[in-house]
Structure formats: structure tokens, C-alpha cells
Length: 505
Image (cartoon, rainbow, N blue to C red; front, side, top):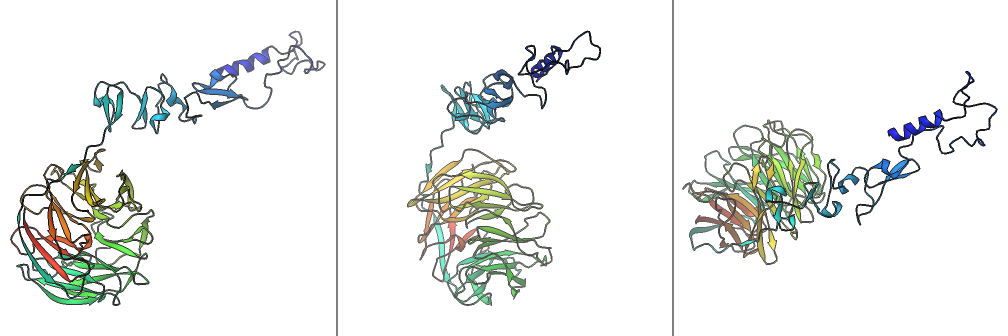
């Protein structure tokens, strides 16, 4: 800006003032007509702001001067004019940060790596940044790791028994509901509009102890969650009814397996999932309900004594059912792992102090539609992996992003293919070998079990047959017979059959 100022000073110094007249000023001789005086510079500004530029060179690389204002030209290639913030990225010599969003914005000889235009010349992968490798042509995106087809596991032994509920369930869970240190079963049965409680005798034999009404008959799918919301040592239940209008959430307060059904609590319509977890990190359990109609998650904050705030819709973006809630950021507050409504990606929404459920990261998986997402430490390194499972035509695929630190995951991910579709499930350690295993529904009359390899992946697949199609909401894992090994409890849609699988993997 110094050049226009000097020009302006020069214009005043060369004006028509008479040096002999002590009263002369820069306005000149009043008898002189400035419009006809040949010594006056007609282009010199006499009023208004100082111009930003006079020639193109005043505007820097890729700029031009128009009526005293710098504009940005299209000298950076076929991308058209550049914005004032980003036109410097076209320069190969300017030291300023070369911000970019795509390789096309950087010009020949440069790639956009981590939002910076970076030369393609490299000597090793370390020169290229995360997600790129060094080749003869410079830094190029890392090619995707080929999927690993999982072979069938060697035939293993499993003790399989079957028993029946009073009505066909749409969801169930295993929990110690009577305080005797063995796992009981609570099942949501919409045909009866009730929750059935089946108590375990400690050897894996279940007996119906009672049914508690939570809605009208044929009320629609029920979803369940368990947790000690009033801190009295007994596990309470939360249940949502999907198709009852107006939709509500009910608490079943437990006193040694005798449940008191609370008044309906208003929530968003068409709830598909319910969770009990500490979302705000205050050590008191909260309620979360995922609405399939509004594609939102409603949160009711608990006070630790059984009381809850009215529902607040903290998540205002479309997400799909088959989400999960767990602390993957290791900060003491539960996080939400949520598939996108239209497929192709999932997101992590972190819990903590208000505002709740803040978006942390999004992960892309092109070509996926129906999907479920889980979190767990597969490689025993102390940081949870992210596990996405979904159908792949008539088969299935598991994708694993490795945890590299609290709240951080690898850019690339492993892929494993299976012989059956994968529609959702859970992670648990089924045997004494290190690492978590994946237990998944298939939508067919079977479930799939993928033993973990202890290194962040899976080794093979077991197939267990069921009498009818499996559902993610009808899977649970726990030691039901007290032998020290985890068992699988699986239901089949539309039937009262409950299959207990005691695998010896």
C-alpha cells in the first residue's frame, strides 16, 4: 500500500501553488481553473479512500487490479477464480499456508494432503502424510486393503439347548434381576404388551417368574435396556413401545425381581432403541431413546435417585437404528456410535457436559446400506476399535478401524467377508483365547460367530442354525450355567424358541 500513498503525495507536491505567495496552499491559485490547467494530473484522487491498488502487481500472485480494488483471477488453471483466502495455494513459491480441499485446487506437481498443497516428490511414505504412500509418481492415495475372506472354523463342539417363552419376543436381555449373582432373562413380548421375567436357577434353567404389563396387546415391537437407575443395588428396566400412540418410555423399578411399572414418560415417536448409560459423565445413569420416525436421539438426564429430566433432542441429524452406546473415547462418559440414515457412513457422537452428544468424527464405507456399528478393544492395546458390520449382497462384511489413542482411529481399515449376511450383533469374549469375538444375526435362520484373533481382526466363522430368522435384538451373551464360560442366548423372530449355545470354540 506504500506505492499509492507516495503517488498521492507527489500529486500534492506538483500542484499549481505559487512558491512566492506565502498564503498559497495545496488548493492552488483561486484565479486558476484546475479543469484546464495542463499541470494537473486528472487521475490523481482528491477525495475518497486511498485505492487498494493501481496495477495488477499490487494485488499479489494470481490477482488483478480493477478500479482500485484487487480481484482474483483464474491463473491457477481450469478451476476458475480463486477466493481471497485460497488463491495463494496456487503459488509454488509463496511461503503462506497452501490450504486446499482437493488435488485439483493445488495445480500441477502438487497434491492436497491433510488440507495442504504438498509437492508430489517424495522419498518415503513418511513424506506423504496419513492416507498416502510414496510411488515413482510421487504421493498417491493409499490403495484400499483387499478384503479377507474368512474361512469356516474347524468343527467345534457346542452344547445347544432350546426352551420357550410364553410369547414371541422382539427383544430380550440377560441381567442379574434377583440379586443371586446368576443371569436372568427379561423379554419384551408385544403380543401380550408385557415384559416377561425368567429367573435362572444357576445351572442355566429358566423359570417364568412373572409378566408385567407395559402397554396394550399387539402394541408393536418393544425395546429394552437394564441399569440401576436409583442406585439401590437392583437392576431396573427401561422399555419403549414402538407403535403405541402416544409413544412413551416406561421404567420398571426393581425390588428383588418384583417390578413396579412407572407412569409413561413422553418421548419422540416410533422409538427403535433404548439405552441406559451415563451420557453426561456425572456418574448418574441417563436414558436415551433412538427415534426411527424423527431420526433423533432423545436424552433424559438422571439424578441418580430414579428421577429424570424431560426429554431433550440433542441430536438433530438423521441416524438409523442398530446404533450402540459405549465409551469409545475413554473419558468416562458414554458415546453414541450411529449409522447414517441413508447408509455409506457412521458417526461418533461424544457424551460429556452440555451440549450433549457432540459430533466427533465420521467414517465412510461406500456401498453400504443396512449396517450396525460396535466398539470394543479387539487388539488388547487399551483403545477400542470401531467395528462396522453389514450385508454384502448374499454375504456379509466386517470393517475394523484400529484405535490409535483416546478418541483417535486409523484412517485405513481392515475388511473381512463372511458367507452369510451380517445385520447386527455384539462383541464378547466367548472363550479363554485373547480378544473379543463377534456374534451377529444374519436375517436368516442362523447366527454367525467370528472368533477374534487378538490382533484387531477375526480368524474364521462359525455358523449356528436357528429355527427361524435371527435378529440383533434377540442376541445376548453371558455365563448362564456358571461354568466360567460365556454362552450365547439367541431368539428367532416370530417364535417363542430360545436357543442357548454353549460353544467350545
